[in-house]
Each structure stands twice: as structure tokens, then as C-alpha cells.
Image 1: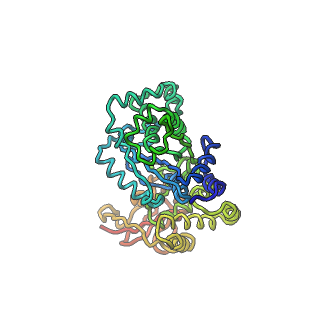
Image 2: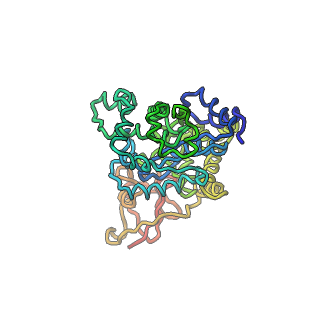
Image 3: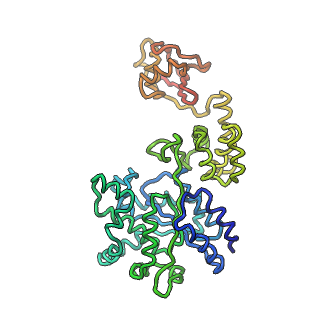
Length: 427
């Protein structure tokens, strides 16, 4: 049923930053193969209203690799942990108080997006509210009694906040404990995530070897998990498989919607293509390794050639993963025509401009660029114009001075830089 362990390891180690404990992975895979029993691979997400981008897909792609090798994907929808909030403080969405209805709507939307990466039809999906909402206060005390405050303060974000005297609220301390208890309830062999989750991953290992915690979780364990318990009633300990953080289009910071440096998997193919062509050359290897299955020796060959060609290959490959086959080539052809070939885009936005705001049917160039949102400020408009980066009309005549009067006509084309266009519509 399962490929040889060496073959599995060659696939699973690609694009992984850390495996803890490293030496146990081969042992687990060997035992899985010997018993013809799939490993249970956990990935958890709190449904706080996420538009899935390529950064999110890195651990999801690892889960799909485990699935393709014959293992069991187990997705945890954190409808209970979502109500606690992210102790790292990274997720701005968590500052807004979510209702149970919000969380469930977000969960359905999230699963629809995840299905573009993971085979949901073969995955187990659990909501951790199924156990946390059923627990009594006595149950919570039993669980919390397995973790010390000193242990919690070894978690990186808590340690930094404690050192800087930034408040740490009591309910936040429950978050890593809850995440670890999820692993007990579903009998995780592997947990996927980023290196910042190492503390929670290791806490889960401790709880899986604690008889009292396993007894507490027993009522939510399915038959498969129950069958894995030893004579003391405990479970095999999970391994943390941690992926690096995918950097965004700026090539420096982690990919994120709030930073505006992301590529969403539900974006139209052409929008994805335009963003891919902005990716800095220095992070191309990371993108190939984490986002595609292209063999690494072929990646090296691609990267040794022209950057544009390697970006087109990367973009077409990734776009076809999330859109119908051939979408990547269509987007690449359009990009070549419109951007490289100078052909006008097919989807130029329009901007309504009131005739009453014009002076004798004209407007100064810098003001016009700002009014139409082609630039954020008039000072930026002056800079663009001074550098020769602004044009008007279908013949794309250069705007030569910031105070140049532009005659406004219905359908007038304005362009800033290589990619920003707008057509005016007199209102």
C-alpha cells in the first residue's frame, strides 16, 4: 500500500525547515508500512475569515503529499480556539469578536478553498468545539493541571511579551493547551505547521503520553485512534513537520494580505500572473520548492536561464493547480501581449469624472492623476511625470509637466508606469 520509506522521505523532506524529532519520522513510516496502517496527519486552522493565499498552501501541500502516499489527512477546524484568539498577535482578524455563526460560515468558506489543495473527500474534518464545548469546568481543570506556567513561558511569543512587560491574558494561555489537546483527541502522528508552533507541537507529545489526559479525551476518540492506545492507555507521540515561512512579493516579509504582498489562490489567473512577474529573483528558488513539484535539478536549470522565462514557468505551473488546466498558459500569453508586447489590457477600469469639476474642459496633469487614483498623492504624481512615466490618449503621448493642462474627453486613456491604466468617463 505504501511506497518504500526512502521514497516517502525524499518527497516529504522537500521544502521542510525542521522535523522534530527528526529521527522518529523514518521509524513511524516504517511501522506504518509494516502494519499497513496510514499515519494520521493533522493540520489545524482557526476560521477567522481567511482568503487563502500561497503562503497558507505550503503546509496544505505537505498534507496532500502525505495523502498521495496513502496517509490519512485530519483537518481541525478551530471553532473553539478561534474564540480564544491568536496569542502571537499576528492575526488582525481576531481583534474582531466573532460569533459562532461567523465562525461556521468562515469554516465552510475555508474548506471550499482548502479543497483546491487537499482531497477533502478523503480527509477527516473535525471541529474542536465538539470536545471543548462539551467539557465541564472540572475537565478544563484536569487538562490545565498537566501544564505549568513555566512551560507556557517558554513559548516564544509569551516569553517576549513577559520580558517586555506586555500583558498576557489568562485566556490566551489556554490556546496552546487547546491546540495540543486536539492532537490527543484525534490521535495525531504528524502535525503540520510553521516553526513558530514548535511549543504547541511538543506540548501535544507530552499530553499524548499522559494517561490522565488520554482518559479525558477518550470519549472523543474514534475507533481508529482507540486501537492505537497502549496498555497504559496512552498514544504514540506526534512528530512536528514544520515548513518555512513563504515570503511575499516584497521578497522580505512573510506573505500576507494585510501587507499587500500576497497571491490569492482564488484570484483570477491573469491577476495571479501579473503578481508572479513581480516576484524578486532572489526568492524564486523558494517559490519553486514550496509551491511546485518540479524536480529540483530542473529548477536549478530554469533559474540559470532568463528570469522572465523561469517566472513564466513558475506562474503557469501554480495557476494551473488552482484553475482549469491551460489557464496558466492563457494568462501568460495575455501578459506577453499586454505587458511585454505593449498591447492594451482587456480590462482597463473606468473612472467617472464630473464635467463640473473641469476648468474649460481641462485639468492639470498632477491633479488628474491623483483624482483618478493612479497615484496616491500629487507629490507622487509630480515625481512620476518628472521621470516620464505618465501618458495620455490611445497614442500614449507623454505628460511633460505637472501643470500641463489635459483636455478631458469621454474615453480618454491615462497610464502610469507599465501597468496602471484608466479610461475617463464624463459624467
